[in-house]
Amino acid sequence: MKRFCFCVLLLCSLPLMAATPERVTFPSGSETASGLLYLPSGAGPHPAIIVIHEWWGLNDWIKEQANELAGEGYVALAVDLYRGQVASDPEMAHELSRGLPQDRGIRDLVAAFDFLAKRKDVDPQRIGAVGWCMGGGYAAQFAVAEPNLRAVAINYGPLPTEKAALARIHAMVLGNFGGQDRGIPPSSVEAFVAAMKDLHKEVDAKIYPDAGHAFENPNNSQGYKPEDAKDAQERMKRFFARTLKGNG
Figure (cartoon, rainbow, N blue to C red):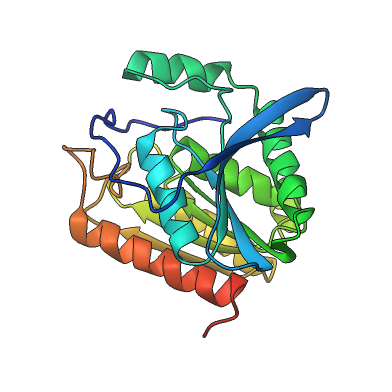
């Protein structure tokens, strides 16, 4: 899978967390995968969201996203696809992303789904996923691989194109993309939407005309679009409330 992750390096520190996450491990084939688990208040069972990081790894910005989702009532599991490594510069991020076998990444995400589905505080019928950049591409491929995933939000991630793969997607799909993203041009988004609709799949993709890649990340000093980012976040918030909570 091509990874079009030309984000700007995350430099800012994370605001104080509402709750301390728990590092959890779970089997992934013959290996062990891990992630940070953020819990909402109350006994549940709650809806859950698997959070998939950018090519930088499981860094502070991704932790912040998972923490915010927990604050909205979801069990949020931020999966560590790099097994503890976090990039400190674009060259390292490039090497880490190239060194991650796609089949292992998808296997880890499916294992994360199984881990959540077995928890007493999670409703296994209401598990979704969200990813950005490289993680957006993995979110899309995760939807192909896991038929029980209920909803997935893809933020400027590479999209599958094979009709047979799209036919295996059962999750409802939301997408947010930049019209100036040279790696994921609007034409590829439009083709994906058209193919999904031909297959009678539920899909809602929005292209922000003036935005480029990684426009939602405030640490992307050259490409952050505050108004577009806020709109994209609100779209995701409404999407998950509808698909995982049954609101609206």
